Image 1 (cartoon, helix red, strand yellow):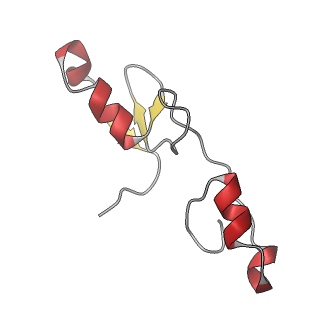
Image 2 (image 1 turned 180 degrees about the horizontal axis):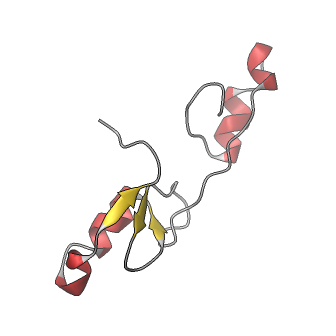
Length: 79
């Protein structure tokens, strides 16, 4: 949500914005993780040139040659 500054899937956006002034809020388009196809992509791998959620990025890039890949945040990091 542009006005709230929060990330929602389409269903949760509709539920959270169905009353009051929030009905006029604007949904943001976000990229979805190429691996799980359900979470918002939060990292872009420089070598793979794909976008992953944090969980999938770490699961796939923890061993072997993939562990040498670097990434950039494409959303704000948590914490």
